[in-house]
Amino acid sequence: MRPSWSGHIRFGLISIPVSLYTAVDASQHVSFRLLHRKDRAPIQYKKFCSKEDIEVPNDEIVRGYEMDDDAYAPVEKEDIEKAEAESGLGEGELEVLQFVEAGSIDPLSYQTPYFVAPKKGGDKAYAVLREALNETGRVGIVRFRLRKLPSLGALVPGRKVITLEALRPYEELRSPASLSIPEAAAKPAEVKMARLLIDQLSGEAWRPAEHPNEYKKALRKLLASRQRFSLKASEEARPAGDNVVDLMSALRESLARAKGRPKRPAGRRRGAA
Image 1 (spheres, rainbow, N blue to C red):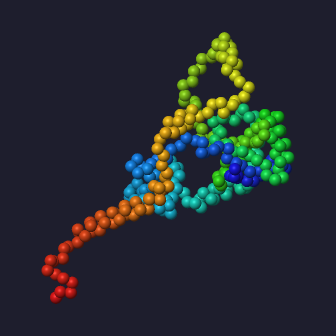
Image 2 (image 1 turned 30 degrees about the horizontal axis):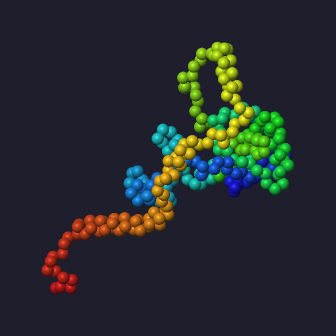
């Protein structure tokens, strides 16, 4: 695996050189490519101006940030870079803000997991931090820059590897206050029966390999006998198709212009007096 970030975990006078590795294999996610049914060519999306109905090149596109209801302010690249610089965070730092009880973090806050691995010279300090976190049942809340954006994360210890969970900004989490949640208290006898059922269905540890993706399994079984094709042939043939489209457009426009011009008298010839 290639690291997606490298730097140091810093807390107190301790500095541990580490690298982050994406913990999710995106290739295992069930995804589909949109194709043209007629010729199996990939579908492409182009950026159009909703007012002029023309395709817009990237150098003419600017970001807009919604300030109020349907009121936007333009955001230039320089504005984003200035905001990033004012965050006051170094590019290669995982700054520990505090250590908290693992159960105090709302699971909805967890966004993207990364493996944290020590770099040369950081093995011992890494092991000490991992064991200390495991023994205390705590996680480290850190701030860092991922792809230049300031982010919060949680250092979660495992038996062997420390995981960094990128945290969603709390403003993005909805409040459940508007949901209809029953207020009635459960009877002790009902809770006791529920606990007995939970105990009966409990295991020593969660083994995800025992619960594979049944949807993916069924989909692959269904498609095993289907005829297969390569997208390369369609992509290689695309320039020729594009040229045909461009040529037809040019011919139509030329024809329209020709129709608008006054016809030359039949008896007239170039150079005639």
